[in-house]
Structure formats: C-alpha cells, structure tokens
Length: 113
Image 1 (spheres, rainbow, N blue to C red):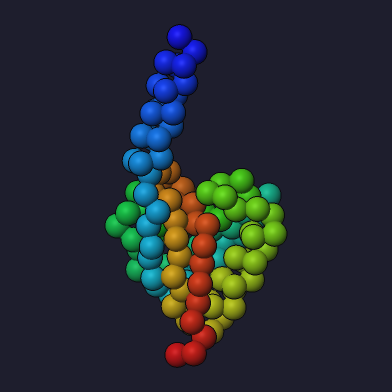
Image 2: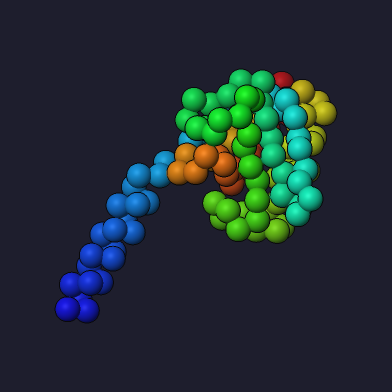
C-alpha cells in the first residue's frame, strides 16, 4: 500500500510540475516597485501574454522563497533591474506562469547595445 501511495504521490507531483512552464520574456523595464518586506515588482513596456494577473500593466514579482529566489539572489536581481532601467536597456526575464504573480527567478541584460 505504501509503495502504491508513493507512486501516486510521485505521479501527482510530476504532473503538477509539467503543467507549470518557465516563460521567457524580453522588454524594457517601465517600473521598479519595492515592497515593504524587501520583495519588489517589475512592470515592462510590453507585457507577456503568459502572465495572467489582472493588472495593467502586468506585475512581475521577485520574492524570496518564490520560484527558487534566495535573499542574495533578490539583491542581485534588484541591482541588475535598477541598472537596466536607468540605462533603458532591454532585459530578458524568466518567470513561472503557474501563479498570477508571475514570479521571476532569472534576469539578464545586454549592456553592449
């Protein structure tokens, strides 16, 4: 019975992970919105259709403990976001479409253009 339950649990967890997708999006940052607990929100000049929150513009959250983001990663993501926004550079983000918060876990910017 335990073995059977283990298989069912593994299948359900695997199926749940298969439903959620990592989504890539490129755009210029429109707004960096720090929150009181240390997390922050980014908005972009062009939204991804995969981000399904009801905000206009869409809010993309960066939060410790969400989508693999640690406290150190949050600081790095904020600093890169601010640098890119100040220089009007396009960023490439990766977020998970499993939640309407569109939690970002990676961000890159090309400063060569």
